[in-house]
Amino acid sequence: MPLFVILTLFPDAVTAYARESILGLAQEKGLIRILPVDLRDFTRDRHRTVDDRPFGGGPGMLLKPEPIVEAVEWIESTYGHFRKFALCPSGQVFRQSLARQWSSEERILFLCGRYEGFDERVRRLVAFEDLSLGDFVLSGGELPALAITEAIARLVPGVLGHEESSTRESFAAEGPDGQLDCPHYTRPRVWRGLEVPEVLLNGDHSAIEHWRKRAAREKTSRRGPASAPFNSIS
Ligand SMILES: C[S@@+](CC[C@H](N)C(=O)[O-])C[C@H]1O[C@@H](n2cnc3c(N)ncnc32)[C@H](O)[C@@H]1O
Image (tube, rainbow, N blue to C red; front, top):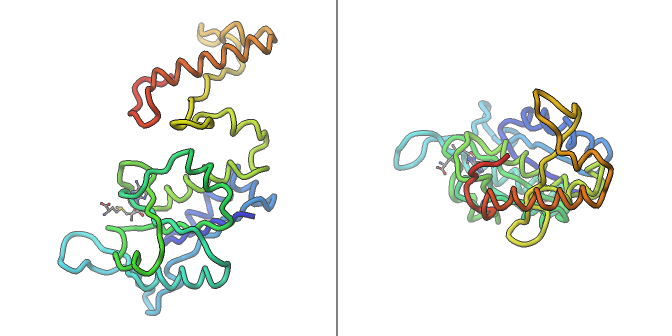
């Protein structure tokens, strides 16, 4: 069962999200495990201090190196070797092809930074790969860790109700991260004067498949290459 360890100052926030919906169900079924580990458990002073001012001055605080390195050492001595990612805006940008690649990893660890990040010496002692959720700055690594965990976990066999779902979604195909999903409709058939495309209502499965493929191609070409900024997505 794949194990995702999330090293964080906010384990309760991680637990709250991870016990809901698909991730919660997947854990109940024993298909994955998500384990938040509190960095403060690896401090040695009575204030459980995890941060300090940066040498050289400047705004903000930094995560101290000792709790991070000691936490990783304890985690690996307890559970075994992990593929380790340090979340930071300057890392490799995550995408669906990486989710596919990493869905066969047995153990993945995410280090969630806070404040201005963490002491650079951590990287000399732990083989972290730097990973980003995108070219923007958040206040911590918890949302990226959860988002990336969810993207990977959805590809673990059994996690999605319909195995077909993950192969029909946006970016599912090989290539430059594949095609986008087609538009979808549900009841009511007419709502505020807007009608569901007729082809979806007539039960002709090959016509429906043909329509879906064409609509997906059109949507993909409106957006442009996968790495391009979004223009008008419908
Ligand atoms: C305020 S940010 C630090 C930003 C850092 N000083 C910089 O300019 O690159 C605090 C923490 O949030 C997390 N974070 C922020 N944006 C992120 C992103 N786009 N992807 C992954 N992690 C991010 C990282 O763990 C980071 O250490």
